[in-house]
Image (cartoon, rainbow, N blue to C red; front, side):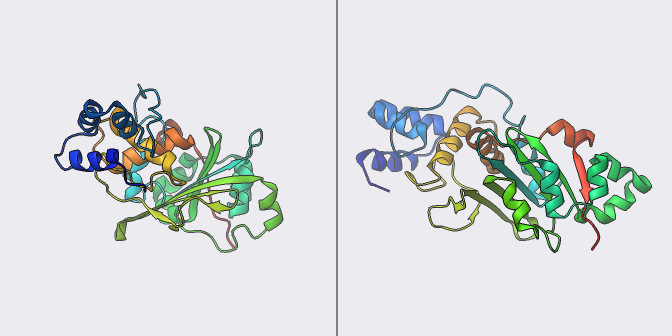
Length: 266
């Protein structure tokens, strides 16, 4: 990152402590451009997006804390095709290894839980998945990947997937990863798969001016809009929601109406 007078001023003021809003105000009093740059979370002073103005846990970040304990699933995977196309959720689930009869019947999570008063699902939940479409993305949530998943390479390529976002939680080891692939290229500033780690508010978690600078901006916006969020993971997830449009239908999960299936037995 290029070292500028604004960068040095930001580092010096941060040492004095304070919230991101207080840091932004202090930098703005010295130089309005520095204040705008800090608020943007990026490398320049292009300004900020409009304030969120809604519940930050409404669309995607609601799942952040339970996901850290691998609930409801270890892996949250999202797939998006080119504009004008849709990655069909049923086809994706089948290619991944979902039971065809349950997919065809439109089985829901509450249907799996209803068998034997839920005891059967408790024993088999690690062999299940949930899937659907929201916010222009197709989501597939699961634990372990079944053997032979995506064995039909031609069918997978026919889905027309252009972007993949994968979040994985290993709570026993406190490892939480974020992986973003676009047009076959991992967006990571050559750092490989990225861990979602605790970070100090007011700092940019990723390289300024890099491929993930859009996420720096979204994280800063989340910090400024929602100082009530105390979880770094909720801030990250809200930033992913705002920058990439990730969604998960909260009511469908709470009421058990999200589509679900077990992996097909081999």
